[in-house]
Image 1 (tube, helix red, strand yellow):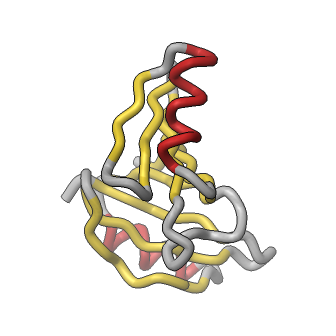
Image 2: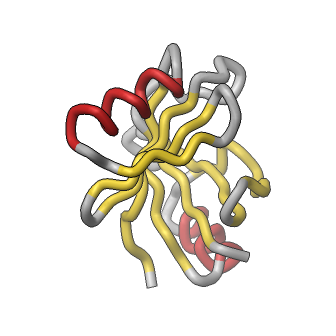
Length: 111
């Protein structure tokens, strides 16, 4: 199973970004320290990354799977390039990859 269920945006202030969406639309915000916040909107959760060392240069769409290792094999077999090795984060593990057209995405699971 693969489904898009998360998008991560670079931000100069994860706190300010989260607070904006809470005030503007009433969405639930979960801060994970001063540099990261999740925002839960109907049907999608998205995050704001304010740590410059961890930010992607563009929004990062993430794909959920039940098997991270199998997803990596599928990505590489289809011509994708892993750009960030699997790592843990609050909620699971993920890796980043670049598809042949140049866009970076991520695959994650709740391991």
